Length: 196
Image (tube, rainbow, N blue to C red):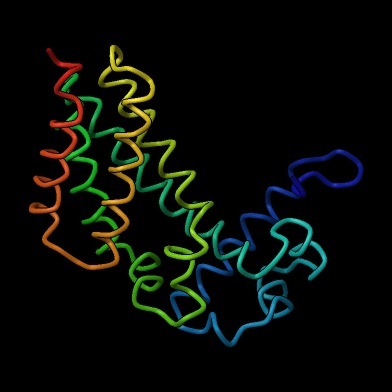
């Protein structure tokens, strides 16, 4: 993974990884991402450029990791709130949509990516696989927990549709409450055979 040093100690690598993520986060928020080279980010994180390449592979890989970290933190919050929601999967997905859209709107990094330059936006569009994989897994897990009797294929399809609607609504802003109601209606319709 690149976070373990040659002598097997993981702690130094983890520290370097977090410093690199923090340095990249700062550059994105400052609006400097497009003009920064890998060596600039490595210097800001107090690590070698080679360490940066070893851990993330490329500047885009680093940016993807920063966005995934931010979205995972947002989903941690969502999951804590949903724990009190009972087992209504459509409502859980609707609430998830609402919270993620509000979070994306209010989160400085995610807002910067959506409104940023051509080097930032692809992590949500054409080169979004790492983000979609992480977010899709979180949504799928939420569905499994709230609808344990659902056919696994149905749960996976619902997670995929929810994810794609969520990303679409993030890129083309809509009132989060309206988006949540629409997603909940779609998910409810997809899960109707399960609820009968």
